[in-house]
Amino acid sequence: MAPPAGARPGWSRRAQYGLFFSFLAALGIAIVGAIMLALSIAAPTRYAAIRGAALDATAPVTDALSDVATTVTGLVSGAGNYWNAARQNGELKKRNAAMMQRMVEAKAILLENAELKQALMLREHERRVVATGRIVGSSFDSPRRFAILSVGGGDGVTPGMPVRAASGLIGRVLDAGHFASRVLLVSDRSSIVPAKILRGGQPVIATGRGDGTIDVRPLEVGKNPFRRGDIIVTSGTGGLYPPLVPIGKVVRLDDDGAIVLPLADPAQVSFALVEPPFEPDAQAAPGTVAAAAANDGP
View 1 (tube, rainbow, N blue to C red):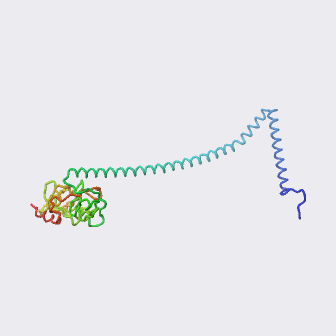
View 2: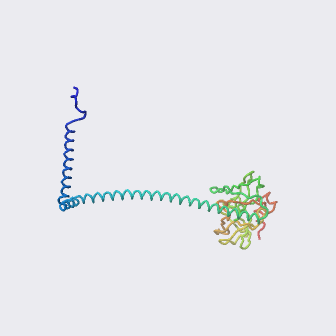
View 3: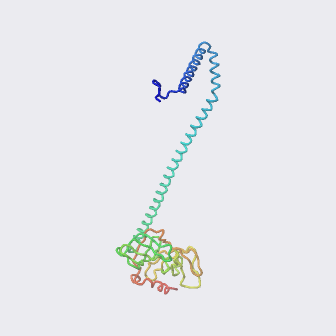
């Protein structure tokens, strides 16, 4: 059935009631406002009393709303401060980590420069040096102890040449390629170096143990001549290694011998010098140094 003509869409009795009560509320507010205005003009004292009573009635609500607003503002401000502090703390941690990294890098550069300077000074004061190279790797987990040196046959390096650092003897060249060479460390079991005690000059034999240390034994059996802290140096016997090159320091006595810790640790040394044999004939048969040392006994 079609709606009656003239009817407005959505119009209902509920809407009429709503409009009517809204009109009554507006009218009531206007009447109250007029009465309050007239009262303020005709009787200001009584109007002031009524206004004070209204203020007292609304004060608890106002205080409660003020407390709520203060609490919400404090929470928002505290959360903002917390996140700001957390962000600043994260930035400070990143800066601190970057500074620590730079300090480590700077310290590493200083140590490397100091080692390079020592190597250069050693090269200036030592006799003819074949080549100076960087130790690019060494073995730790194997009983065989080798190091890789960044100089080889192209630099004049040949097998059998002694290798040392500013801190002491490293070993001898075992194999030489064109650009790199492999060094047999003094701590390898195959390494035998004629040596002596620096304190008294007594000849000893230094043999690698394969665990990063060296076993030293005197040529004269029966009495242990070693003391903790003794420095062991090369004796020059056999002609391969030059004399008075530091090998290591005694850290423990063992029956009639001692255990020595090498002074030139490839894990802590960056640069090494390759030298010609102390006596050129010794390079042909470096294994004869042990026999020569044995014949050099007292």
